[in-house]
Length: 128
Image 1 (cartoon, helix red, strand yellow):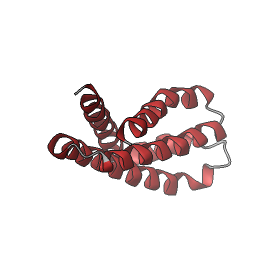
Image 2 (image 1 turned 120 degrees about the vertical axis):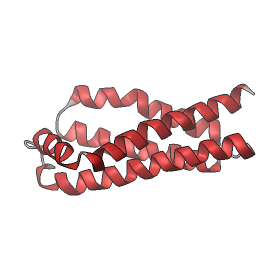
Image 3 (image 1 turned 60 degrees about the vertical axis):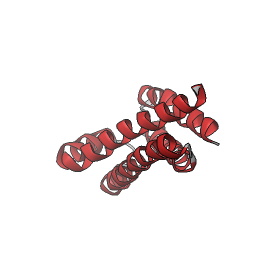
């Protein structure tokens, strides 16, 4: 029973995190684009801000939906396959975000991502 709750809670955590983050990027596209344009203005990624934001918005929303669906599968069928894939996708998203922060020399921003990345790894571990 404890592993079931850990699996369910990690899936719900990732669902909330990524649905909110991904949908916010679509809902407030203009504000997010402005923030990211300023954030990456002095980095080698400056010319790629718009496509990077679009890619991350799609990936985050997809990850959130997969995590929510995975939570349903865990609860209804005790099947972690979807949640494992969502946790793996979340790890990839965090690696992309981490690389962007490091390239833009935002080392504090990169450090903030580490605990979230560890949740993704823990999710993959408990859902295998």
